[in-house]
Amino acid sequence: MLVTPAWGGHTLTAHEQKILATWLERHPNFRVATEADCGCEGNIQKLKAGDGGNWTPVPDYHPYAATGDFNSDGVRDFAIVVINRSKSSQNVVLLVFNGHSGSKAASPPFVKSGLGLQDHLFFGPPRPKPYRLVIGPFERTTQKF
Image 1 (spheres, rainbow, N blue to C red):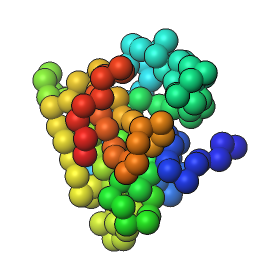
Image 2 (tube, rainbow, N blue to C red; image 1 turned 90 degrees about the vertical axis):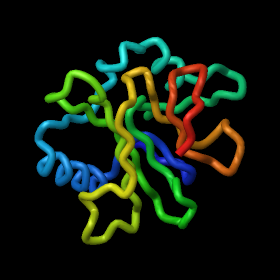
Image 3 (cartoon, one colour; image 1 turned 180 degrees about the horizontal axis):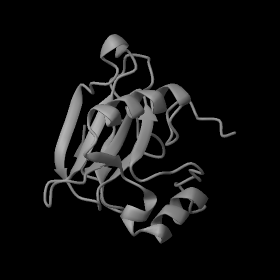
Image 4 (spheres, rainbow, N blue to C red; image 1 turned 30 degrees about the horizontal axis):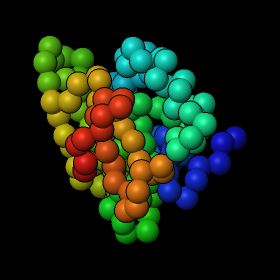
């Protein structure tokens, strides 16, 4: 079992997986983006292994999932990229779920559509604090949420 650092990670807990499954049941045209969708196996392996310098290994790295306290309220949140199977364009969507979602757990407070499969999620070290959820291609992550 992987231990997720306090700053975040890329593996969803059982509770987070349940929230995501509920959302997917309500939105059957969507599926979770997978590492295979990325076409960037080499980059994923480099992130998982680290570079021996500033970039320490991230063994659970997944390009389309991130966890951490994105809104600085002291509670873990999670972000996931989903793909709309029924659209030919604008089909990649970022969902951000807050940890304090309560009864609205299956309704993410932040949704960003129009992304591409080259956009990957990053959060935490070695980036400087305060950590922000960042999305963008490897080597150039520019959109902050």
